[in-house]
Length: 188
Image 1: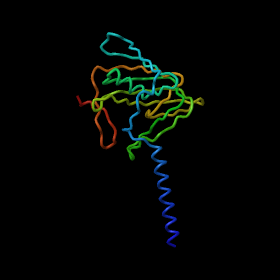
Image 2: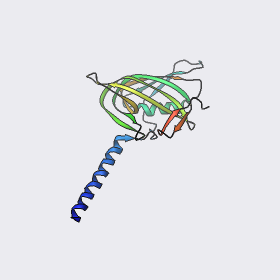
Image 3: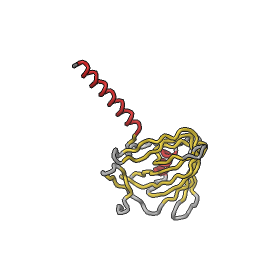
Image 4: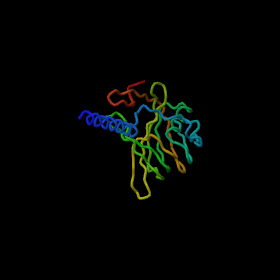
């Protein structure tokens, strides 16, 4: 009897460990940063030199990871506030759906070639550093779509991002209820 109980406990512990590892890989914390340097082919062009509100075209090419490239752009060009849209295509991506119970993003894998039907987002400062927040909708060859918060997006063959840098800095603040950094219009 004791032996059977020990075996059942062991099976339960093993199952719990397996479940928690599986769950951990299905979810990602909002604070996990994407490293820069993952978009070596990225090209940036200022579209309106001399104007007070700057507009840029950021073009990503085959194999570039767009989310890290946008963060790298914001850091290099000292962007304190911006908004953007994009179209193009991807060879794969990881999108996310925010689970308020877990305070984490549930990963949505995008496998294979997809069209970027729409991507929009913003850039604001958190603790003095730029933070990129973007969502996208992608379509497959049969017309079905996937969408969500962008965690990673691998370009194939191109992604064209049009960025408008805003004249006033936007600040983010940490929201302990959600574990997210949210834009705070009252912050200066």
